[in-house]
Amino acid sequence: MSALVKGSRSITKTVLSRPKMDGVGALVYRSIGDTELRNHDPFLLLDEFNVDKDGGFPDHPHRGFETVTYMLEGQFQHEDFAGHKGTIGPGDLQWMTAGRGIVHTEMPVKTQAPAHGLQLWINLPKEHKMCEPQYQELLDGQVPRANPQDGVVIKVIAGESHGVSSKVYTRTPTMYLDFKMASHKTVEQTIPSSYNGFIYGLKGTIFVGEEGVEGKPHQTLVLSEDETETIKISTKDEEAHFVVIAGQPLKEPLVQRGLFVMNTQDEIVEAMVDFQRGQHGFERARGWHSTIA
Ligand code: FJE
Ligand code: FE
Image (tube, rainbow, N blue to C red; front, side, top):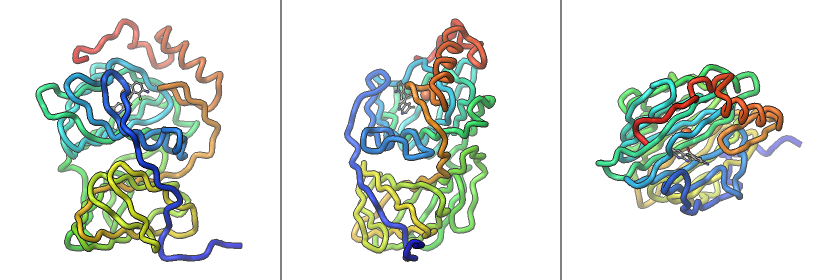
């Protein structure tokens, strides 16, 4: 039987992230990637980080996936083994394709307010896992906005919303939208029906789908998998801020060992050997230490 055609995708699961420590003294609320939401294909992890001057993510490698860092408050500095270095602040984002290998450091700028933002890990399709590393960096002002009605502003970080498209190149087809809504508004968002998706709450309370399932800060609302191409989201008495993230599931074998994500156990062993020996993409890792950590 085909799925009942409804007006909106619904919510199949709501998960509240709990605070935990990762990296070195860094506070994160882990959404995707924690026990209740492992491998929401193609997504591996979503952390809402809140890192003060004593915390950070010093020198570490990645292979086989992408990290997308979206700043909400404060500033983050990064530096990699190729000398690529920069600072991102509120509203800015770094879309990093680790591909065959990156070694880098991610640290808050110590004189500023705690660095607060989101880091999303997107798995790469088999044929892109060993690609050349790439950075796509966008300052807040370079991210296009859709404004479908008064009191609704949608930043189109990746994908498309209400006729506005992002220029970010996604090897795994991905939609990443930041919504700011005034009180008493309703908006509909088209999401390709083949995508897995979720909503993550940052501020205020939202009501999702025909049933009006509640979503609050630090909560992940998992979207149903059905034929419907839209999701309906409303606010009541308060304004709200949240992100809608969705992507094409890869449906490929996945073996993860910490910061290496590949398709087979052999490829994981290869990644560890390559990193240790400084080969196959990790050449510049030999003897490298960041200057900022
Ligand atoms: C990690 C060591 C790490 N969440 N949110 C071990 F450094 C990391 C890691 C991060 C991370 C970085 C930023 Cl900027 C924001 C993050 C984890 O880099 F995930 C593990 N397990
Ligand atoms: Fe990293």
